[in-house]
Length: 590
Ligand SMILES: *[C@@H]1O[C@H](CO)[C@@H](O)[C@H](O)[C@H]1NC(C)=O
Image (cartoon, rainbow, N blue to C red; front, side, top):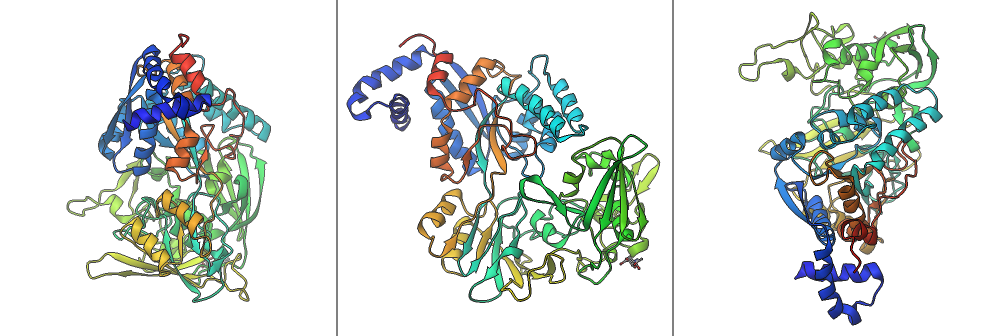
């Protein structure tokens, strides 16, 4: 009954008719109209436990019903979901473009790797832009020298995808923060896990503040806390914490601009080998949190460990292009670091801004210190080269090299050059993380002025539920939520609407697009016409208002428009257009 009511409202809405007077007529009409449509059944896979996806799925199902399409949704656990994705056993699957700074090329790389929905879904693309050709076009785009050529290359790729209606764009995600008004000045970050808490100033109360950060899994976990907090490895490290503690050579700024960090400036020159030389002038007078000096020897040490050939492979750092693109690196003096690429590779600086694995650790964190051997004492996580059962060594063999991970010298000796120094983790009697403390690094080149009311300590707090976070904000025991998935979208909207006197709700620019991938290789979405019907039948504005509390913006393309080289306006727009959807799937006059 509820569904039926929605159907009627939908029709009335579409034609701007007054619902009250026409309802009896429409009820019969609506049934007839669906009868005119070409009947289709679609298989929609949704990850279990993802409440937002489920809520959106409901609306998509009822919108598609109005044009004669029956959707069979399968709620799958992570393992089954991944299996279905890899096997291409779906017509529709949710996906999210990877947050800045990855777009668009790193996400595009996933089109060619089997564990992402697009890999199976693009198999049905007809010539001339088959999946194989698209892959080739992406590789070529990354070699383009000028901005104009890159823009053109990406526009060609995105146009080809657009023409084939490969996805239904839904919404653009903005990363929220909810901040008690005893604090001011927060400037949202430019990448998904960049939380620039150093921009906060304290108007009243303690200079130590409590924060519930958005972690990889949403709520900040009491099982893993911020992870090992070593710079060169992955989970359970939390991006945001590594980003606070460790700097890289460059940073990702507004609009995708690459800005100086441990490199104060750089020049780019063609190299005789056909690639390019990036000459980095390293920042002087920088010390690590433990007092060690930053200079070219330390930059080289970090590169030597992360980019040793056995770790450049797919199992390790081969998920992004930089390790393969680099030919070599060396110091020409104490503060000049030269990196040579094999070919032109324009995402090089953008990829150097990534939070892992190429951020700079203090030499004291390496087993063996400055003299550490990248093969026998590598900074990779120690457990990675040990047999899980008996703990015996299980080295990585690659091209005649034998590599052993040694991890970091001292788990308490975490030391980068970043804006925040790791202090301590407080656990309860059962070993669950309660709080993690960081203190401000006033020696950072971008440190807050000591005369300002800067924040001197961050205390990260774990909470069991979204409701507990909300309650803590409201009773003033929690100063700030920063990041996605800590509060529900609806609650963020409640703070914005009803608690504006006591809380500020800054949002980032749109950073990631939520899309529904349409499988071009499985009937009935193998038909271009079907994919177009789906795209025009879904009323995303209404869905966003209802399910995303209006905090997201409607998406009209695969990537957010301000992602690098993704700004082309492609027509026809993949918008809600009920009449068009009807015309395509229910063609007889009515
Ligand atoms: C470079 O830094 C290392 C480690 O902090 C230090 O031991 C070395 O003396 C420094 N080199 C120069 C030339 O300052």
